[in-house]
Amino acid sequence: MSGPPGGRGETALPETLTRRLSSAARLVFFTGAGISAESGVPTFRGAGGIWEKFRPEDLASFEGFRKNPGLVWEWYRMRKEIMSRVEPNAGHRAIADLERHYHVTVITQNIDNLHRRAGSSVVHELHGNIERNYCSGCGAYYPDDRLEADGEGVPRCVKCSGMIRPDVVWFGEFLPEEEWNDSVGAARWADVFFCVGTSGVVYPAASLPGEAKRAGAFLVEINTGPTDLTPAFDESLFGASGDLLPAIVAVADSLSPRNMRKN
Ligand code: OAD
Image (cartoon, rainbow, N blue to C red; front, side):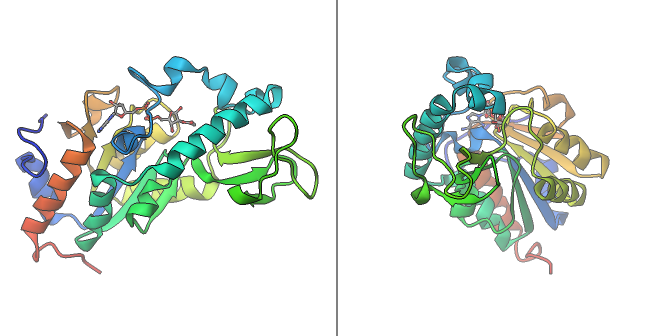
């Protein structure tokens, strides 16, 4: 396991990882809230995390929404507002930049759209996207600028009057089937599988590193500290993703052109 010895751009990677990167064609990045922390999006767990202040069953379950849709919408309006103001950081941009050298797939648990905004071309969103909404009655989709709230602050469907909800996955709900199947396929296809900024405690998403490992991938964790999944990794790099991911780009650049993207 290694920590970053220096600041941005000075981080040395373990030799085993550099060797893997020199022969890899396909990289998968499985990301969580930690990668967006440096953009100013709060994480869920740990000091100052969202679930320290709020109960997930009140704000992130259909039962909570049914009981108090106004409260849930108040919370999601606040989150939409935060996420509309933030920008991708050096970590998101580094992952997009690696497409110059590798086939890159992003699997994210984040709903903030920052990977796409950073330029990543293949992004599987396992927990939805805060920029979309749909009617819980008839399934019709609504962009944010077409939401008209009732007296309780709950947007209603113009077709069926059903309550509109954000297009995010809540506790107890299934993951979107196509995104999940594509993610399992990508995990099995990876030469190197990176887990970045996730505590790895929410399933089924957290089963993807095991899936990748069983199919032969080299497993790398990037996190500010150890997680429940740390013992399963081939390498764990402890530090900020905004420092460590650009270091991976620097190594990939130094390996070029031998390691240029293979078609
Ligand atoms: P968590 O909040 O559980 O974990 C964030 C992880 O990021 C922690 O392990 C931190 O140590 C790490 N971290 C924080 N800052 C970092 C940085 N700058 N660089 C690298 N790592 C950093 O977030 P998730 O694992 O994404 O689900 O949570 C998974 C799911 O639980 C979320 O998608 C959400 C939540 O409840 C739903 O809402 C369904």
